[in-house]
Image 1: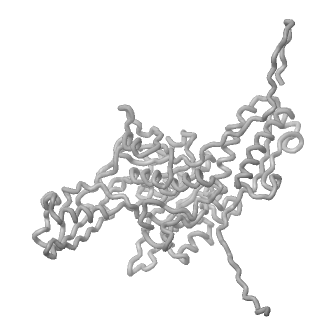
Image 2: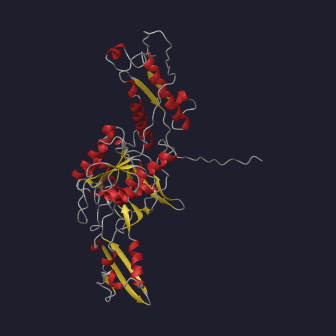
Image 3: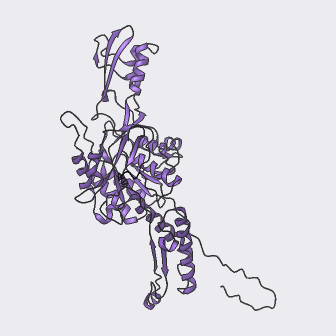
Length: 471
């Protein structure tokens, strides 16, 4: 209580605060994207390597432009004229020639899956197809995002095509582990398609690429990896009229789309066929949107799994339950990889909820790690008022009440396990619980907080028994 200086006779008013300060909760799912964009300007000024807040695709296009234009030779077109305005049209995209710049589509996927505010750190403009993704330039973008306190999720859409994939992965994880207020979403380095020679693909090799790029046990808890890529419903940015028929009926070979006549049947059918050549995206951007959607509708303590992925046809390769076993549970280093799978009648679902530290009982689950991130950052910012306050019981009581009130609300919302509040959390501060006389002399106030965070039911076991007939 403040002491009034009473010098002149009269009546004085003193307001006495009886309520403790409150904890203001931080945002939990603001994505930071680093990568190449068509442009990077705001109000006529360059914003290259300046993280810029974006809340929708209109703003993104205004500041950073559109998608890259695919070259004519990135797709092979075969057309057979069967007569009577009937055609067989086959299109095949050359993965080696298509553009690797996918930031535009990644941000679109983020918003379509529930994403809200994000920050874009452009590292430069599009290069000629297919384009070079320099890990050193990506690091500059990540370093720029490091200065943005609001960012809680890190996404690099082009990391799959980076010249040094391992460097990008480690830069992301190291930043998250150092700042402890954000979480890194890791895309796969490669996706081995299933063929007659490899009927199951080479999922083990794909997984090893991810696992060998990570950092270590204490850092990997701040990251999660997802597999495989997603076939989206987004169309490529082709200059349609310049596309050329490569093979097929001799009279048609070499013709551009503009030569077919805008009103012709073949022109219309070609337009439809080209529209079906859709973009394949790494999954992290969509997952950042899913995280946002789950956080806003259910809470950060709900695992971002068994959730639908929007605007996708399905995963680039199907992964079975048996094939997922060694991805979800890594018997070696415990580096779990979450899988996105298609289920008949349910669509495309996220089917994994583990961090890259999947063998750690404390930090195995994404929801537990991110809930701690949120609580730690929220309390850290809300307790700022106590710096330089008297290190006495009056301050300790206020600090304890502030944190207990906040955690009680989290328990009531279902974030913390326990029938009673005392089973869900505890807060300790002061002499002799968390401090010694020396701590007080040296100006330290130690606050100890324990939380029993709700964990996901990852494995549900139903047990059935056949009863003998009773009558």
